[in-house]
Image 1: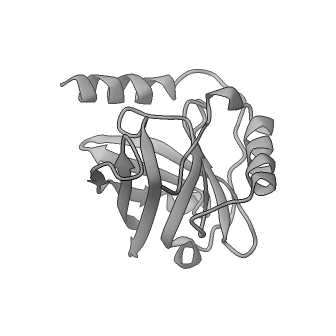
Image 2: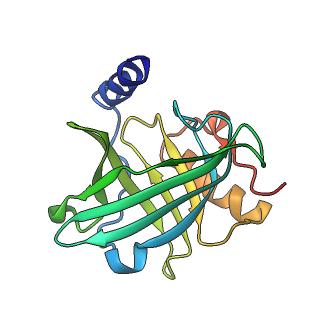
Amino acid sequence: MRWLLLLLVSVMAACTSHPPIRTEANVDIPRFMGAWHVHGHIPFLIDGEAYKQTETYQFEAPNIVRTTFQFNDGGPSGPLKTYTPTGYIDLDSGGGVWGMQFLWPIKAEYRIVYVDSDYSETIIGRSARDLVWIMSRKPTMSDDDYARLLGMAKAEGYDVSEVRRVPTAD
């Protein structure tokens, strides 16, 4: 019950007034599918002590994305946690706006704020600036690349002091 209440509060936070957030206008959805490694995020209820965090997407026409979210909880050798939310792509958005559903009937806002031209780095965010994920296709990310992407999140209005760098190795 506590988890549901916190999820509802988070979704309600998206209703607060913020300037528009940048969203990719034309996402090549098949190229976006596959595994992404999370390198930084604003912790949510379930991933505050996450290590080796990954998110994997599998497209199902016309607009459904089967998602597998996994991480080691509490440490690099901690128990593996797996969640399987469903993404729903807003087809009118050019692929940059999704609803992510962990619990029916609530769909949390999910925006592809940035994806590079070779689909190797991405930033996922929300208009409320309460959650953000910095991800890449590789399990490690250089400090320079991380700082560049963190700077992009800051330029979109995120308080980057809240972003936790996700440990990726033992």
